[in-house]
Length: 387
Image (cartoon, rainbow, N blue to C red; front, side, top):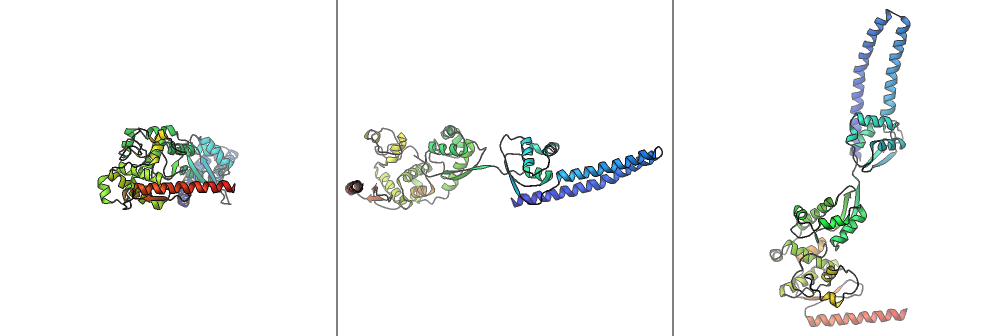
């Protein structure tokens, strides 16, 4: 803001100096021209000569006074005045607002000046800060430096394309259906530098600021651009980097994102999944089944767990066809460089801690599952007794 104001002040001083130069050159010329007419008129009528001199002096002084009155600053309190120029707002509406806010004395003269100087064609939507009493010259200059309006949108880790689109629409008004459509448009995706059939998994979680006039294409370009920059900072285990493509890493990272409640468990969970992939075991991740049915809460039915969908990692070995959500940097890093472990199983403790119990064998895993189930039943009974 200070830089803009200083540049405006410099321009204003230059304009004021130029105006003075023009006046210094013009006034003697007019006076000399008037003097010639006066000499000629003196040959006719003395009264007419006097009237002409008075008229010239009055018109000249009046013009100077009016110019200073409307164009030069007249404020003394330095009170800031904000104006939001919305898309579609007319120049007349802008001029009227500035008069109402006491930035300029006349909206009509400001409007005429903007059209005469062709500044009206350069004014864009945005936010502009004025000072009360800026006058027409300063106000018109500031109108050319409107700051683009922005909306903040927070995209958290673990959201699907549809969930992300819904959040963006809620904050910006951009049609979520358009975002979802573009997220599966192969031509559009290739232009973004993403080698995948859809943008599922590639809409990087972050708090974004989008211009209010942003389109769905602009939003997706910014989000995938941040994904590309973030992915380039990932530190890989060389062996994993040689075995897995970007798409496979993001797919595994998305499952880690949904399974790991605690950040410190990400690399351990990723290590379990890498071990299962290496041994040819199904990953056995319920979040992939939930993704099939978009069922993100409540228990899964047996029929759902037996689905023939290739995303069902309870039934099929290897990675699913693609990511099930957008993973954050931590989950991607965990998938790229997991903890070296010989564990093959984990189960949530369901005690409110977010922790998991890890096991090396299926028998150990079953014992821990039963112990956790019994402990949860005991806690439930105690809670009912207290009621």
